[in-house]
Length: 480
Image (cartoon, rainbow, N blue to C red):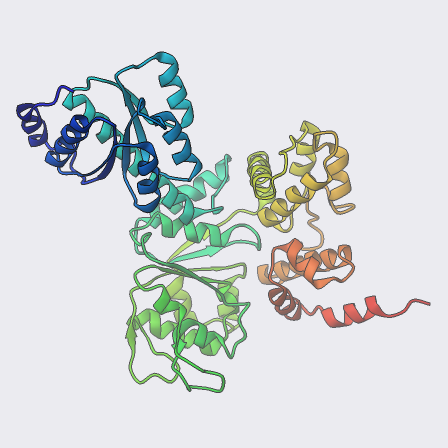
């Protein structure tokens, strides 16, 4: 090995490897182990040495190493066999192979087995440390990418049309600020997804993103959910409960369907927004919170203010930067990319084969009104993947799956007049009734198809004047 003290001192003084790393070095030659360990330690790293593959595998399973540097030719089990076992055991450390008997076939096999690089002995100090530096950089990038994917998970905004491009430009602009955002749009358009994107692209992305659906929580429990309570503060309060605002400290809280929040609760929320502190039920002192507030609703908040169903002072606190999400029927050019995304997602989750969609099938999907918006489309794609035959989703599959008589555009006559809130309510009522009819009044199936919790569907139906229990009784009644 071409390693000398002068070369090492000159190299490390430049600080090429600024991050301390823990390396495992595997080689049957004691001189090589000593030289490599000394080189890495002079460069500011920690090095563990091992002279055989079996011991190296034990060490790699028991400890976390940033990089493993292994010789290929060793007595007993060789480096390639070690590499194969490391990958089989799920060891995530990068592996660099080295050999004094390098051959093209050996290097190709090492790469196919998952080696990051293959070095030929003798190795200059500069080349060795540069290889390690690049390996560590790649490891850090992969780690950051995994972390980002874990945070985002399935939450990804998919679009290709102009309507969403304009909206996403606004998202990027407001995300970098601390401005309060009010997201407006029909049910199923992705309001929570946009709120999560704002959080992830903000300076608060390292902290919590906490959500609460104001329409899904009973009025008597919403204060406890938001602000928490102390032990014994009311019947059933067996211990202290930390509310959503405290959970979101230094992060973002997303209050969905804020238009349905009870008036009494609106006054208490206003106080929190003004003073930056919450008081738990039964508590004797306020708790300071640093939280960015993002809200959403499908309702016309200005109309609710006029009808005295929403506080005007709270409206002005939350309605700083409105974002209006277009319904899917106004962004039909996005349907092909959404379908492709959902098909891949559903196939991966279920271990299915991803069937292609014919051009005629895609035209039918683009002509549908999609009253449930993106959420309905996602559920439809999953249904179509189950119904597909002959390796393709064709027009016949679409026609069988779409509601009868609903494949065309939305009818304008049903909702052609009246305040926006009334038209939205009428639209939602029709969608829910249609879904209940398709599911033969099975509330659980209807809720799943609509992408709602069962309790949320009951609450929504009650608000819209739909008697679910009466429908169930009628369905269960014996027919003469």
